Image 1 (spheres, rainbow, N blue to C red):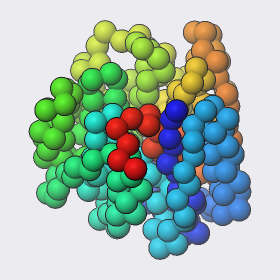
Image 2 (cartoon, rainbow, N blue to C red; image 1 turned 135 degrees about the horizontal axis):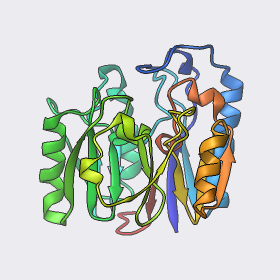
Image 3 (cartoon, rainbow, N blue to C red; image 1 turned 180 degrees about the horizontal axis):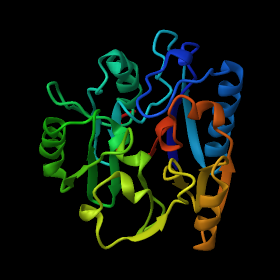
Length: 259
């Protein structure tokens, strides 16, 4: 059984942080509808969804992937690269403490979960505006006793590493390879995004299904051509907040629960 922790859309989402896209008006009701559809799909695919209440004063707080990473052995709470977002972590840590022992990365290290791509026992971590070398060093030290390898990946063209590459199955990556150093990920099979859809590399693979933004049909065709089952989901309003599909949930197996 998988657990998926989500958080309701903040009514302040119109004031979200933006780094690589221009600000556009966000319709709150539509954003809420799209987020509910996302949660419903996670449940349909077998996850038990725990939806935390909205944080009215924290515009980006639905992006629960950023303040934490959850592994089988523990969860690590992360100091976000944007100071205004660091208040998102305490309530998320409280929810995760029911399932995992908690460790913490501390300032001056900064680290966001959107920069962490896990493939087996390897964690590829983006060096971005939001995650620095000290944050990566601390994460490596925390995880070393649990036999995880932490590997830094320079990112230049987007917000997070997982804006540029996500993991579809055992050896297949969906990527915009122009936005990051591919050297640390050599040896994988690649599905390249369609050049007309540069933001299409963030997909969520769950239970034999690739959940994928409906706004990127050309890249969807490329994924399907490689034999994957793709379920498109309209997140167009959330994308105005620089959202992908992985960033709105923390999904993990119910092992080592402390509850």
